[in-house]
Image 1 (spheres, rainbow, N blue to C red):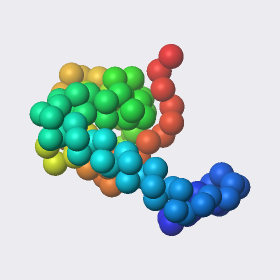
Image 2 (image 1 turned 45 degrees about the vertical axis):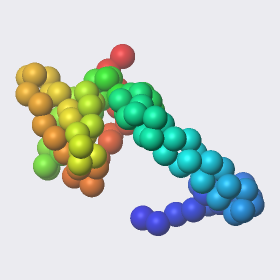
Image 3 (image 1 turned 30 degrees about the vertical axis):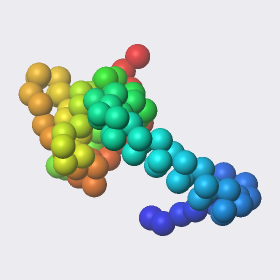
Length: 103
């Protein structure tokens, strides 16, 4: 469902400031790629993924599964490891995060 930062945070944002900050982030990543630091960029991306390398519950193909995010493939699909050690590759739109993790 579409939403907005205003609705989600109840804060006001100055669009030009947000745009400048976004473009600055994009430029930093572009420089990393130009400098041949794609692997470092990929590692930073993975570390910011919700539930990266943490056993968590997901809803996938009409069932609940426990899995952990291991990686992201070249197409942006999540590579998950299930409890039985099988690996699956899923698009974000195929999976729902249940926000339940194993302590």
